[in-house]
Image 1: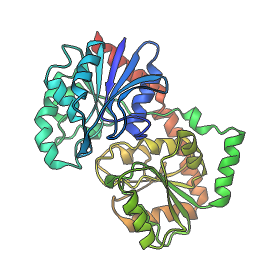
Image 2: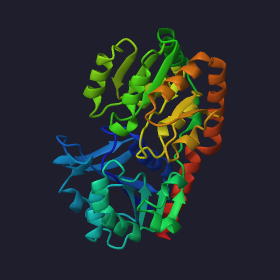
Image 3: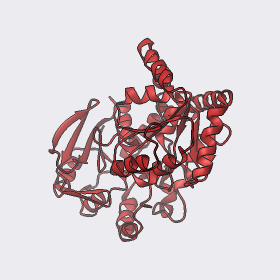
Image 4: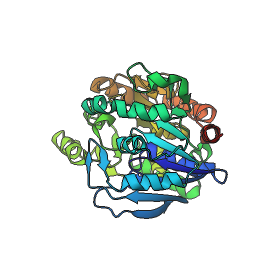
Length: 373
């Protein structure tokens, strides 16, 4: 079976959760389902065909970004072309440009599956304008995949289509993340030696991730805080660190390869997911940290986030944007390493029982095959 997966961006420029999930599904579903990916190249990057982790990826030229979405005139013809050679289409939404292409008839009768990753909470005006277009796409979809029941709320465009919704949590490979070979163990020990109290956070440097709150919470904290990721807020966060005099305690190290992220997660005493809005619907990186045995501090968002690493069971949960509460939770785990280890072990166990990628891939594959009939 031939599958077309489409989203606004992909690896390697966007190492975020959605791109990683698409890649995981693609590699896990072969040979029964062969996936091609269609995305928009970042502005200034050349379009064309590349291969990422064994998956062919077609990229169209983008002129600019508006409200975090690419403007790519060539996407429409490319989408119609790819649809004509596919048995099923998997749209990772929100992606308004794909909604326009679908409204123009590009599917040509092919079955459509929508992976609904988040509402457009960061752009409320755009959301109001685009809701009829997105609902048109959802009407055509044979199934809508969400990572948690909290996404199917009355104010979401998918609520009217709740009977189509399938809940499939994201997953990771717990064996690959939990195991360290001799060389990896040496690197982790070196990190711990340099930073015996290490707090790690990871994600795109964008407002809803709450890294500015984490930086404020680091004031007076006897620890090293390392923020992994790239994005448009890099300069603003760097300035905040300097203004607060935290250069020796807080570091922005940019995006790192998956293999290096694993080492940082193992070396960390605490992993923090400080997200501040419902744009953070799941937080895949927190299950990656849990798989490494690292306790999590997350935020009480009205999404799946606090139900993954649960308060006082696999980590600690604090109110979003509450600097004092975040500081206290991090300090509580740093000051009580025995409790931190207990929470970390519980997190690793929960990943194996609830968030194993093999379970996720099997569920996704079943939905795709059912759509084709």
